[in-house]
Length: 280
Image 1 (cartoon, rainbow, N blue to C red):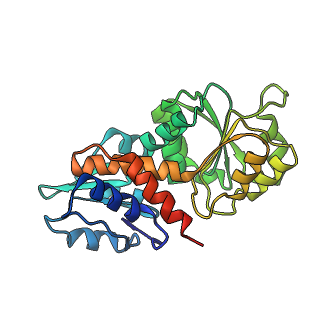
Image 2: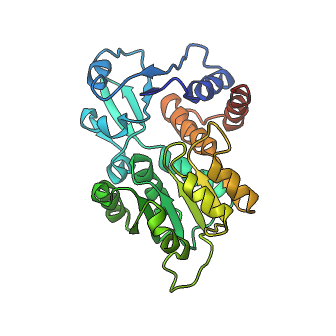
């Protein structure tokens, strides 16, 4: 697992649990601190004993020019979270998209209603592709800087999904609450937060005050848990999905790609939850 910062990552726990369950005694997985500047140099040092890499921020986009080939989801989202190393080549994959689709499906969330997404970065791009594949036709996206939303809008165009940008902040909150539903206040079918810790707190306050209602809230964060928006949504009676489910299912996709074997999801889930329970 490459990224920066990386010390908090739960991925080594999940992958190691999978190797143990599958009897792959010669396999290891570690977290390596690596930023964008150091990525080309690190990739050049990897020998034939390396099966693959997991990538987190800020490397999901930075790795693209270093790949020899990539799957269609990487092309659609402009982000790769997985690199397979075989035969001296580098192949990029995106398991975030199917991971999010699985997490939504397991929670029973259908996307036949209005969707509000918070944030417009690399994770949001993969989320947009997942929402499109899950049946969403239009997504309202709250961003701090609409001028920087070009990559997100490009993904929307490639995925055939319509995006409506609104400002991220108090000035647009009533518009967000109404959701442009012909002036009628109605719950969002899904509120999906892709922003860093604490950034969605003002939306948590809206939920507490009854100014933002949702059938389901999905926060891609998983530690510390619950986040304020997840806690507020749970108290309000909404279904709540933790980012742990996304982490678990995208990791399962990586295990399958790297080992050629179906991932032992329940063993990975148990190990991950046990590790989280042991954190302060």
